[in-house]
Length: 178
Ligand code: HEM
Image (cartoon, rainbow, N blue to C red; front, top):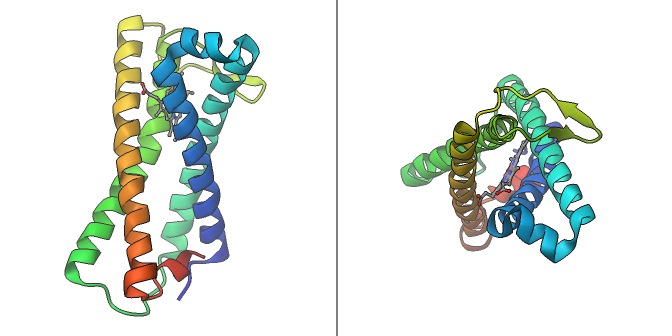
């Protein structure tokens, strides 16, 4: 009645990386480059941008592996059947989470390249997907922000659902991922 070990590991590694990318991304979005630089200095600022991009690209790679593993292994049965509402709500939240976790890194990569900034991956630079176009870059990064807030709301619902199953219903749903 549990997900395979590979699926559980991928879930928790991606979860930690997404929380980190969201927190750093929101800081960068709120303060902007000059705000971050004035607060933390240029060295820390460059590291925050570099590792935000690096971990974002890693999340994209891990999501591709995750979908492949899910297609190969599926999901375990529930110990107790879910209600119709729980089934639809969890399918909707999980589907949107997958969508956002693909959209975020892709938008970040597209927007960063279109803005003429390097797409850093550790000490490498990945090729920009789009040619420099500041207007398009601005639009893509705006979408990156909107999808980021949507992702934060979905994570809130996802954790709320998991806690409801663990604390209120005590029906073993959370145990499938532990
Ligand atoms: C799952 C992966 C990612 C998450 C959750 C994420 C999340 C975020 C969030 C929430 C923001 C703040 C947006 C705002 O409020 O305007 C942000 C900003 C930013 N993201 Fe990401 N991001 C991800 C991947 C990437 C990738 C792969 C890149 C580039 C290769 C990237 C580049 C940027 C840049 C440059 C900013 C700062 C924009 C500015 O200075 O205003 N992100 N990110």
